[in-house]
Image (cartoon, rainbow, N blue to C red; front, side, top):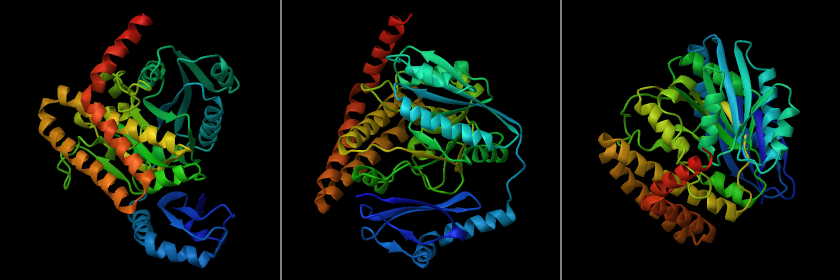
Length: 405
């Protein structure tokens, strides 16, 4: 099972012939380079899909998105770009093949980006086992290198905060490929929202060549849609749990933060995203703290990256477990630090528990063992997170600090 990735301008749709191993497509539609629609569609393996069939899909699934973008282009054109200084930070650990691909795509986006944007590229080598990452970075003349010996993603992120030179810090995971218009999207978001404390972007798959990758996309992936969003304040119509359900804001593999604001907030919580003991929650925590500080958080789909999803079921299962663990660790931490939010956090735990159980029940109803396994893993991870993951991680983090003092 694999899906072909179709990335096309809506005005230039053409026939598609699937390979014998391909039994579906992931269709990304753009209008003047701007993502306006994304969806998955199954087909017979090796079939030929005529452009007329793709147009039928556009009319059925993307008509409203296309109309909304056409109206926006007509009535609300993008403002002129403003001068920006940005440090793009990639925190990495012993994954030079992925890092090289990420850097190459980022530097291409930089070369074709707006003249008004100055982009500084920084690689943070997090607890490296050898010198391979340093050597790779040295092969890129315009990329800076920083060592963070303490293991843990949020240690690496805080090293980037300290080493950053730009007004804004863009954090990219080493397993993403940056779209050629990524920097234009970021520039547009900050020109439209000069008061933004944070910006997140669209995350789509870099490949769909295994069942696990397709399953992840069908369960929602990292997607937050193709429409611009702005979050500001402590309430949101129709969402009684806002802003505690921080997963709505975006993904940490593609996020931008105003550096001064991150410093004001005390940086990333180093007891989150610490690796196997607690491999998540750091992005949720910083998104929540940005919004609770009164600063706007903006979602810009034009700020697009392509992520390499976990290729097999066991790796995907570990991801869902870590999502449950990280989410509930963030909730437990916030419950202790934000007393005013406690009623919403209690309601959030109840909502999430019911949601997780419904996911298990849906898998049972379909007799889908793999779906059941993923849902149970996320549920068990959540129970682990509520059971004291954050407290244990704080102790471990302090031990790491002491060891490197």
